[in-house]
Image (cartoon, rainbow over all chains, first blue to last red; front, side, top):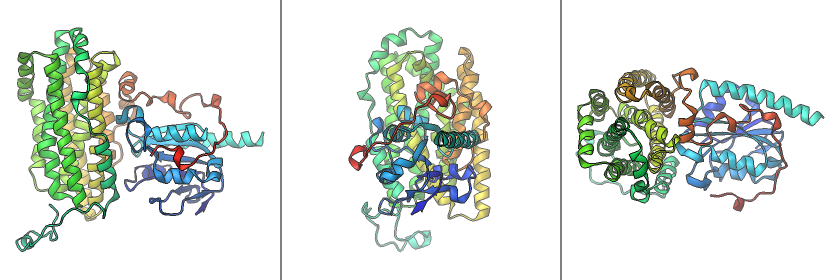
Length: 145
Length: 330
């Protein structure tokens, strides 16, 4: 699947991250969800995008990045178009909180823009909404310069 | 146990039971959570609590009493969840694999309950331990929260048991969890805090999983029943919240921390609701947990770690590097 979405996300069947993305209220064509199963064809990004992903796994980050996200980022054009990461998690996991976001940000050399817990609060939604708007403005002025 | 028939009248005709087949997973989440719980397995004997003996000696008598009371309260909740709560959910399981996961949850709750006894035996005298357990039997607010939850566990409504169980895992523990995080933020009882962090991590998976199963089961209910359960959830949370506030005052007024603890309660009540698929209830101006506590819980949870929240303009965005499956830890 090819997409021009500016926000690409993974959410398991728990749908926590999915609910958060829905609450952002972005237009349909602006969001794309990675497939639930790794056997499915992954998404191919056509435009610069921000990735939203939850953290799975335990101490030290091992197994923390969902395999569906790994499959997606192993496609080189996807890595070239990623501009930032937003992590979902739970502070109960101590220093592994949102660690999948840290790993992807480090690996792809993009900023970890924001962290939220579970499906996010109203405050998280408005901060990310506003933050993304400014981020894309900043991005387009960077590419115009 | 899940059987080939579900109806009670039919079950008298039961001729066989099904052996669990992990190669056919109707719900992948069961396998994922099972693996996570197994990988997270730990025992308190591995944590050198005896290194906290000197630190314990620096606490005042009131602080020691408070700490022991908090831990007997937590022991009580783990006891309930281990031997009654998680077990009571088994007959309502949607899959056989859920039953298996619940047996893991039940066992770990018993490990948690036992780990407090290990902390006590390392740090305290037998007489002080007995006094603290007596307090937990006699404190009306602690007993009341146990009673409210136990009433649902002994009832017949599987959905209400799931709600009560998720609220216990994700909310009721936190008036207690606050204190070891407080000591840890002051570099006190840090090994004890390591044990509590392992418990906190486990409770997050338990609350997430039981809440997830609640949401799956909710999909099978009528619209009317869904509304009833939503109302019930908020009523129960509010009833338990009011009791938690009283319990918090009983414990923490003496050391002047009650208001700080209440913010932590609000913050975790929101997370309990989210685990059940509902929107957070408490607004951000009452969930602003003391940064020292939040940092003891999770060192990278503060705003400075976010690009949106901080002074993001100085952030350098580099070039992407080559990556292959082998580059990722999984």
